[in-house]
Image (cartoon, rainbow, N blue to C red):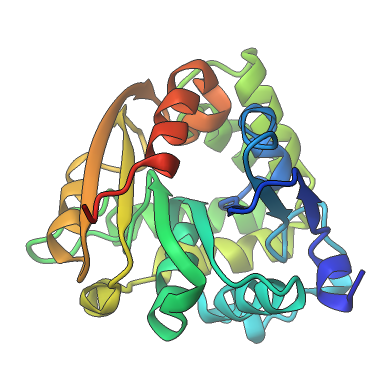
Length: 270
């Protein structure tokens, strides 16, 4: 196992010819895909990894300058694919960090046969003629909450994101991975997440994109999915799923798994 693989806790499962890369979002780690993986490994070679800063990674490897923008995560993804000698893959990503695959596909479109984007967004901050879900005041309050009392902030954030009460299993699981993050790293990652804006390069994303969005999402307005669909530079398709919450692959696996499998197989270029 190479240095990059060790740093990101890379796991390669299954033995299919086609490669599927699963990339988690903020506050989770690769365990968030635990319900999906068993349905993939018979037909695909599945690559799981932890984005740097997740509680499951070594905090000593977290370079605050490198990860001050989303580009640091893009470099990591490309390094993992290079180290594993991947020639082409289906990239499945979540939320803001799903844009890692989109950006990577601009410079290396040969590496990506398609992107499957779950509750994805190019920008969370509202702007003129764009509803991302958050005003600047909301973001300032959130960052202050992380800075002043991280555990208390997590206890409020987890139920909101999942769309359920604190006692539910998905909220408990999301709380666990949130709590595992070092607070200063969580603050750094939150700043990246809320300051990210890649709307200006969406037209450069030419690989096929499958946009899957929860019908009810406390983080992301449904219209962001349509915004992506209208502004991506290649073929794309949108499916609004009858799921609630921003982490449907954790909270509603019985609904999203058949949808994901269908989109992984679906060729929208024909």
